[in-house]
Image (cartoon, rainbow, N blue to C red; front, side, top):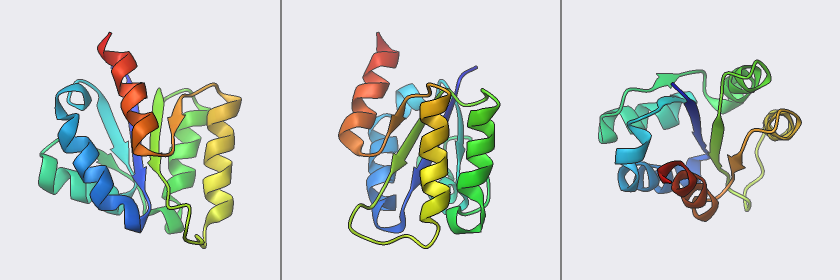
Length: 122
């Protein structure tokens, strides 16, 4: 089964939950992984099985990045907050770079994420 990674900055977690609930039917067909807090919110509110890693600032972005590098992630949805500085920005940049290096589709906003999921429906 294909794997989708779900990550959201603090100010984007509600948007991620709305996105997941809106696309629950499609997402339920995939293995889902997430950073800690994002995954917890999804588990509790969308009742989808999801494997969680550490929170982003504690290394979760790097853990997901290692799975990308090992070809164990097929898509990354990372709802980033472009208006807030992130203390772990180098980790975020590294994750996005790995997606580019390994040709993994990545969405950094909900509109692009919807387009990526739409491609799975066809």
